[in-house]
Amino acid sequence: MLKGVTLIWPSYRLTRFEVARLMGARALQISLGAPVLAKSEEKDTIETAKQEFKENVIPITIKRKLPSGEHSVVEIKKAIDNWVKEHPGEF
Image 1: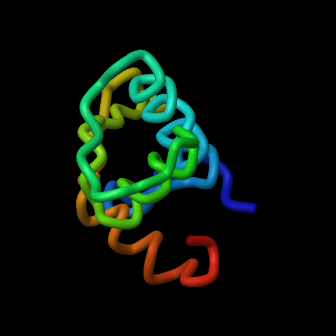
Image 2: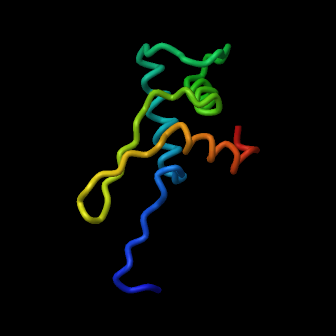
């Protein structure tokens, strides 16, 4: 273990917690009447949110609070592309 070193997750990668939060937040938006941005015949909002994630059209920004108190904005398009490539069987 390195003492005094703070590791920061890269801004072009998502954590599994951020992916879950994105899906849940987007599904909630859709269920409340937000326009659907992906071609989908699904009636289930979670499946629709997954389709939007897969097509990389989720209109949400992720802002991380760093240990220093500063904020970092995630490069969402690049991060979703990386997630889909690294987890091909999930969608």
